[in-house]
Length: 205
Figure 1 (tube, rainbow, N blue to C red):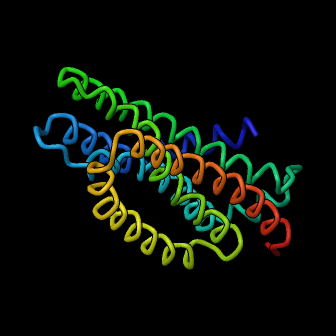
Figure 2 (figure 1 turned 45 degrees about the horizontal axis):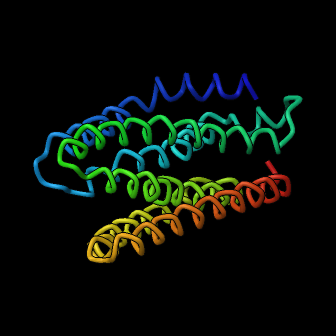
Figure 3 (figure 1 turned 30 degrees about the vertical axis):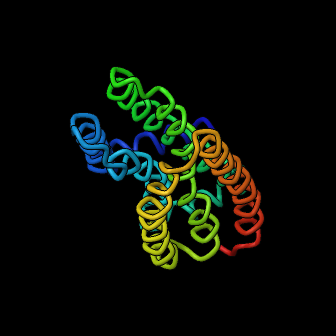
């Protein structure tokens, strides 16, 4: 798995630099903006979810999946590495986003908002790969791309509809809702991981 991770890190640097640059730009916009625009806060972790499937599209284009099938690697290892890479990229942008928002919100006495963000951001960052990766491993990137556009629409709608309502909730209820979102997406991500392994083991390369 170590070699696969090195390959993906190299591919991230070669093909994913623009995604990372855009994530950093949105991170800066969200931090420097005087208004609390949640879209700028969510966007960097959305990029973290997009990156692993983007790398899979390059793997398909270059014929890596068939080459990998000829190597002494189990399909379980191949799938698990992509999920580990997903968690790695998410963790990096998650930490940067929380750090930036802490710098912005703490001087305003909004420490509670930082805690809610810490619980909510995994939902927005891990929902997309949790749904897309099983589709990609089973049917390929072309079909997964359609699912991706649908997911982005759903996530943006949730950000615009649900979050303003959460701000009006009692603080205790808001924390409970944030924690519920966190537990739900972690459970979904774990189920997605197992499902991807099962689907990819049955796929003919």
